[in-house]
Each structure stands twice: as C-alpha cells, then as structure tokens.
Image (cartoon, rainbow, N blue to C red):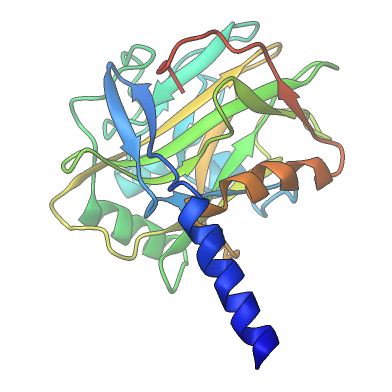
Length: 262
C-alpha cells in the first residue's frame, strides 16, 4: 500500500510540473488553422494499398496524367494540378469540381465536398463502416521526395479533423519502390466519415517538396483500419518514424517563423 501511495504521489507531482501541450497552428490557404487535441493524427504506412488508382480509387489531388478517373462516374471532384515534375513543391487543396485544372496552389476551391457526398462515396467504394485511407502514388527519380503534411478540414467550422504533420520544418522522405503512375505506393491511415455533418463542406490539403519526377497523386482508398494515436502522443509519433524501414526523418533548419505554410 505504501508503494502505491508513493507512486500516486509521484504521478500527481509530475502532472503538476508538466505543462499542457499548446495547440498547433499552421497557415493553409491564407488563413491560420488551429490543430487541437481532439484532431486525429494520421498514421503513415509504407505498405501499398490494393487496387489501381485511376481505375478503382477516385483521386482528390493529382496530376494531369491520371486517366480514366472513376470520379466522373461518382460525380466526385478532384484537383488536377498539371504538374510535370521537378517542382519546388506541390501544395494543393482538393476540389469539388470534377477535374478542376484551374485551382491555384494553396487555394481553397469555391466548390468542395459535402459531408453527405463523402459518406456516400466512401460507402460506394465498399467501406462498410466509413473508414478510409489516403493512397499516395509517388513518382520519383533515384532521389527521395518529402511528404511535408496532409490535412482533412471542416471548412464550415474552420476545424482540422485530421492531420499528418511532423514538427515545423520536418518531413518524411519517401521513395517509391515501384515507380510509375497508377499504382499506390504508400498510405495515410486513420480517416473516417463517422461524425461528418451532411451539409458541411470539407476539403483535403497536401504538401510535398523536392519533387523530382512526374506528378504525385492522392486518392481515396476504402476500408483501411489502423490504430491512430491522439495528437497528445506527438513526441511518440515522431520517434516512431525512426523505425519505418527504408524511410528517414529529415530535420531541416528552422526558419524562425512562428507560423508558416504547413
């Protein structure tokens, strides 16, 4: 009993001196977004999801060389950013317009997905419980590219629902084992349509840097389930990257700005 009392006293003392984690802020589309403790921290998986992206899985953000999108059949919009490679960065929101090739970088579309639309599309793709992931089709030379961040946003409430977000000026270097367009290489896990509000507007945001080949693509993959940590497990998440085979966390020089593009 005495040991239990001592342990409890130690935990109380630790809680008293441990500061609460401050909310994280990133600037997207020209405005600040606060990432609170209730936001989901997305997992990163080097296990390629199944399927052929142009034929089976609708794109949300992709380049011009993604033919035969099922988006047209589903009436599901996506951003076509027309990148041909060797760009400093890819920084785009999704769009509710089918093949929106006019949306500028880091710009929120005037037409976005509704909650009802996302729920219906994810169900139509075969997800029985509303879970889905984001497949990433990376196109690279022999050099790595850097996945900087990814967000799932409630535009109506100006709220971050889910985020893949290493610390400021960090990123995860990725290199496709099987380079080429059409087949996914990686995935971000932990997304769900549960809790989406039918008449709210939603959007995805992706940012990659050190682009060195054809355009990369982000697309919906249904039914992937994975244990997803809370944002309060921030430090553990970053440390965990060290164990991902073939991938390396790369810390770059802090630029001194409090807030910048994620």
